[in-house]
Image (cartoon, rainbow, N blue to C red; front, side):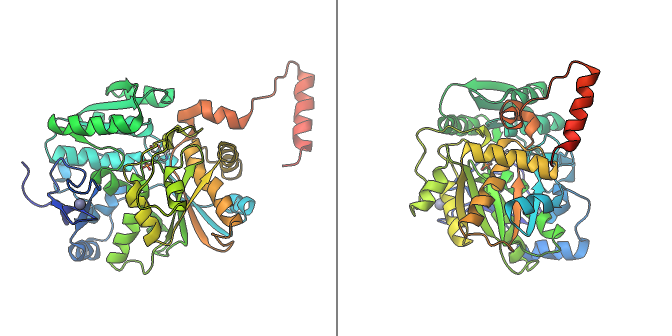
Length: 416
Ligand SMILES: Cc1ncc(COP(=O)(O)O)c(C=O)c1O
Ligand SMILES: [Zn+2]
């Protein structure tokens, strides 16, 4: 059992009843409330370190003062994070927003934001002496965890639901992970994995695991720093388990706790209409999320029908004065095309949901034209080409030099 301090991290704590666990324990949820545990820090100590050392390096580990790793030899990195916050003027004009930014998470080493959480999760697995890491994933997390486990020399076991996009499956297999495709509903696979994994010494780095949340909160730390510690009015996060939504909120909250910012953004939780259990529960004013009996969406990355951090997300929505919104498959595909054709960013459908929902929120009077808005574009389109092909059409076929000439003339004559 590891001893000693984990940086400025103190404990893992339940946000409902205050039940405490040590940082090194392979436990992820409160035994009493079944609520996800969160890492808490000595924020005075963390701030002292930041004031003394500053933020050094780039990416996730730039924020080491706010991460729970003690031994630098255990840090496993592929240079995740450090993604740009892009001022999106052309997309902003299309949507009717004057100050729009994109946090472009497609640029991570395995092309999704999951790398931030995998880096911290796999590093922590080495800290606690785990035999293996594991997760249940709709694709991106599996590919990401497999990559970091390979880099850290750890065994990786992942369960994926049937129908996971092939690009993501290949990415996971080639890294040498043990992969099982399970024919059971996603929430059930998650529960089984947590139950068996713990007993076998498999360190779980699933979608809302405390250490995954720690890594992914750096999305907010980076965005805040890039904005010169200004706080956006809104930040829109595509949501499935709500692990990342919780992480993004935790980042802003910790910055305020340390006095590095003086406000908090309003949190926009966005889902696909075909699987929007959190949005629908929010609209009905519920405390708990009612599972969706029939998930069906063009965005399989956000298809968890029974989100394990759903209750936490509803609390965050209330605490931040936020809003939950959903978009149809047609709106998502349209937004995917728009992101690429206005800003050059090829997102997978899930990553385009914030752009689709920003339009709805603007039309509904929830966002104002002059609000500062950040869209988190979570994953790259190349991993799910089949879905992307639905929104981009196909090339023109030409058979002769004359046809090429006519084609070029027609292109130049065409309005942009
Ligand atoms: C591209 C993409 N966006 C969003 C999400 C949703 O993240 P979370 O499950 O933490 O809510 C996922 C999760 O797999 C994802 O792969
Ligand atoms: Zn509790």
